[in-house]
Length: 365
Ligand code: PHE
Image (cartoon, rainbow, N blue to C red; front, side):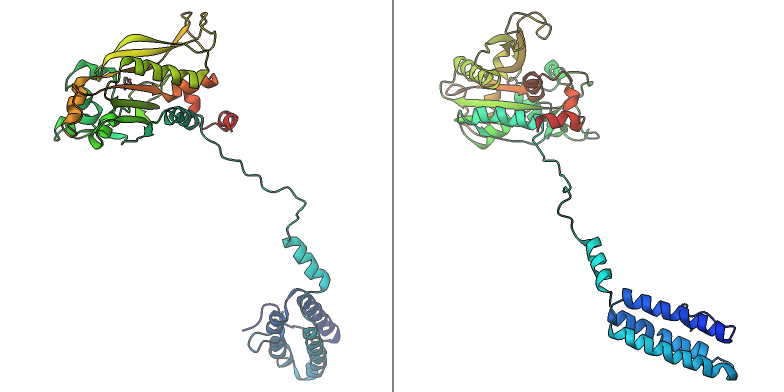
């Protein structure tokens, strides 16, 4: 096979031969500068496809009789050149230097800057709430986001068909009609089911906070998102009273929003607490004087709470008999993390937390 690098010789006069060999010599010098010794040897002196073999077969042997001598002389010169080049083959110092420089690291260039990660404002707020309770001796619990109808509703004293269920527009898992209602799966609408999961696992006393993600089939607007986060709290022991609840939440609101904040408890309803209350804090924007944010009332509603309903303890007592409502009592509360974060950081669109815009998130770094 003819090596591609060797053109066919068509003319054998002196001038044509000089030109052909001169071009090969130049090529040999070039490869000697570029290749390492072994690659150069293979290319020019290789037994099978070395270029000198190609020249010998293609030019010398093929030369017509009268031209053989002229080709042979020049071939000899070329061969000596190649052998001489082999001795000193390898990139010249300058070429080697240039190659090194191309690969080298220029330590004077600025490096690739990697953004430092930071906590998402929701995670940060959630952790802050949890640490307020950790300091009060609460532990942290978690539960599943895909929950059964029993834990999300029934054991929290929302009986099947009860209108209180309509207050939490629920996303349910499809095609479960063959299961009994209590086993059907849904996306939990609140973190309250983890109250029951905790009580089933441990007898009183219980002091626990439960941070987590919840889902509701609510249309998104400035203050509603179908996915949001809550921190649930549950405290059960002997002689837990409403004043313990008030003191605990008053302390928490002061820890989160500053010691000047006042709290007030407004009658409310939740199926799993009795009595129930909404907690309001004095408006942190106007100090309680009345402004647009608090609709001129001076107060902002922030969370729900109440004394654990005896019916809830009755469900817990099925697994842990110590939850006897005649002997123990407790309080529970649940707060929305987004709402608290929006208040703390003055954010007016809940969607900002979920849009993934670095210009927004970077401000919390
Ligand atoms: N689970 C209630 C909600 O999501 C909040 C709450 C929790 C109220 C605990 C009282 C006690 O609206």
